[in-house]
Length: 243
Image (cartoon, rainbow, N blue to C red; front, side, top):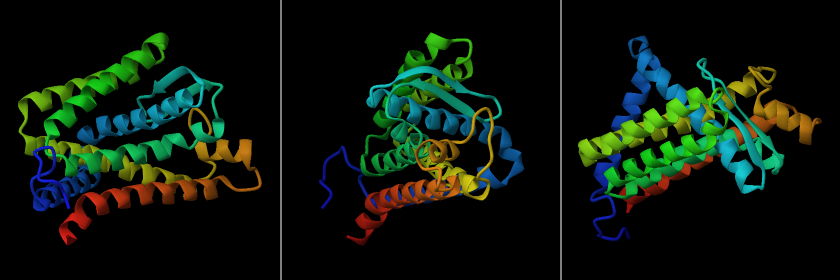
């Protein structure tokens, strides 16, 4: 049973309505060229979250981050020293999916969406400043993305209604979560693709299991990401409605 506390979503239908509406918004953004200018900064934000996954994994496993960069073409790279590489490499895709799944679950089970939005905003600003300022020249775009998005979220929390905050949080959760899955499936179809650096799956395969193709590792990560998202949707929306 969901506690009848003001900290929880007031109705199951509210979560269902706004998650469905957010899905429609995401589909429109992805498929209508007119909104490409809106999708572009969101794509950079997804890259920011992806690289942040590498950063957090490095720090948690005792490593050091020397560079955290997002490029204008949507690519990104994080250079680390030390830490556990077997955890750091998949943390980009898995971390992005975990971010999307966690945000979706929290937004649809807690009623204080404005508090969630402001906390996320301040967190992005603090994270950006802490990890990009030491390498300001190379990390300028990452700093800009984190601080601008963080400032917009703080402003939204102050001026927007609880329902509008819920809609935006769901859109961000779906954009990040679904992109994590789609990006990994892209690697499955294009195992040799590379940008500034070789993709994470290829790097993981080369360093830890060269007898297993990068596409297989990418598929495993994609299934893990999809499971995280499916679990979030089930426990935050579907299960509560069935009850």
